[in-house]
Image 1: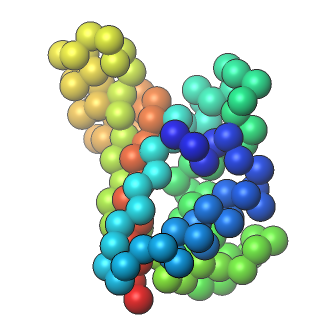
Image 2: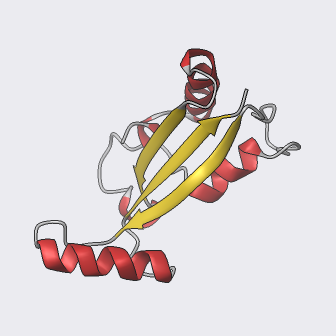
Image 3: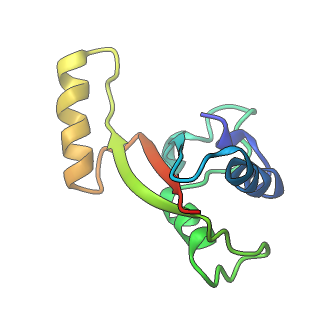
Length: 114
């Protein structure tokens, strides 16, 4: 839960720095609120949903920064709502992974390929 507090250039630097410090086949885990839930504090600067991360990892990113090709997405899963009530959280997380609804947080596992 850090990337949403960073400006785009800082988020890009976070991803490129992770390549430098990870061993080959090492994992980098990003956890962030979904954009719908991010704008309720002054500390959240920009949402970075999984699709935005996917775009910067593809060979031609079409973004301001160069693509990052040494990281690949290993897994994405979503957490649901109601984290204070365990059974509802469990059920809403299953629902969030099966549908695009009820997603409050994502967990993105990136793998260094070189």
